[in-house]
Image: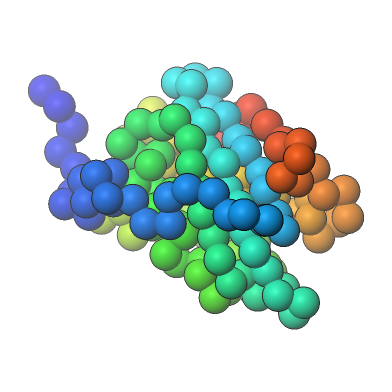
Length: 142
């Protein structure tokens, strides 16, 4: 029997918000879930005061990963990097409006992990994952 997903998940999967690439992103990070092969790339444009002015995502992913990335981009638009980096996973999980089974948590949280890893790298000055050389990270977080 297929899992029962909310209309929110189906809508964001079919018509994802902020899908695509930015011409010159300030922050770029790509993460991979090695358990299922989902891959999400997050790109941000930020102001000098570190406010997110544009966000895009793309990748090959399942319904949950794609919907979660779309919802995440809606949530963080206008956030500062610090606010986005501190976003609790419960906020994203609640926005999915469907209980997520433990086996699918990595799918649901992949975009959040990519976002926060990219922000951390940017803020610490290591800046991996620039547009010229994206960082690919295999997530082991749950």
